[in-house]
Image (cartoon, rainbow, N blue to C red; front, side, top):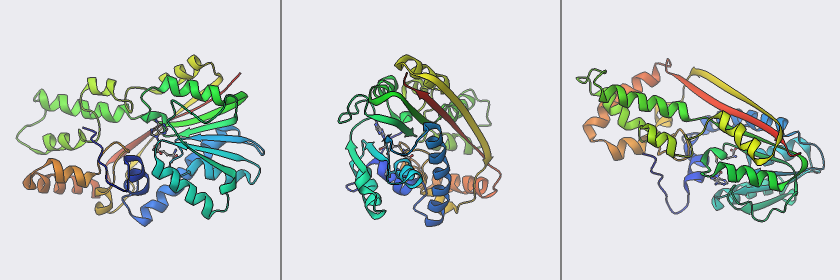
Length: 305
Ligand SMILES: C[S@@+](CC[C@H](N)C(=O)[O-])C[C@H]1O[C@@H](n2cnc3c(N)ncnc32)[C@H](O)[C@@H]1O
């Protein structure tokens, strides 16, 4: 499972943010934009950002949180945007230039575990939205956050908790393997193969992969171990029926940046017959509008003493 693909112009991260997150559908892109701007605002509220501060936004992606901070606070703040994707940093820079705020921004190509280029005690506030989930050494990243913050500086993160999705796929595998599901219906084994391309399907893999091997309590522990105080975490779980996007858009979407999109899974992992059968069943479920989906996000904030 989880076999990221690549082409000349995109890396996995840029492909997801610029295409697969919204299925390259303009209407869906605007709706996603509204939702993630709400998330960015919440992260910035938790970070306690004020005029004159220097903000580090780690794993900035297309610059969502960093540029929103400038929009909210104005010309007095400075934003350091970091990312492992050079393509996304270029994209964030182009957005900053288009908004006329590039002079307030610095761009650093580095991993969260090694914030090279940022001095000790340099930042008043630090944000990470949906980044730590993909970092293999989360405690090391938390120590870097501590290092670059000034005493009294605050960080705020919002991380998806994807473990439950993966455990549901593991459970489906167990039910199929134990014969608890009627094997005369080929749908569930096909569905399992599809879901196993998006999430780990064994508990060993769940424990091994960075995106699923932690929960909200681990985030609190990492913050304590790094030396933070005034630690506060809220886990928000929202379950709702999927917003109705066209099936063709849904086919081009992936649930997270390390997953192939559904179309690629169907085309590369199934025979024509299997694909036709699976797609008819999945599409009927999807278009019924009755399929509940859950989002689990851990919001953590803390202060460097
Ligand atoms: C889901 S996106 C979130 C982007 C952005 N923070 C936002 O709120 O839209 C994950 C981002 O983390 C970046 N990333 C992945 N691994 C990273 C690492 N080890 N260190 C820093 N950034 C990383 C990716 O390039 C991508 O931009």
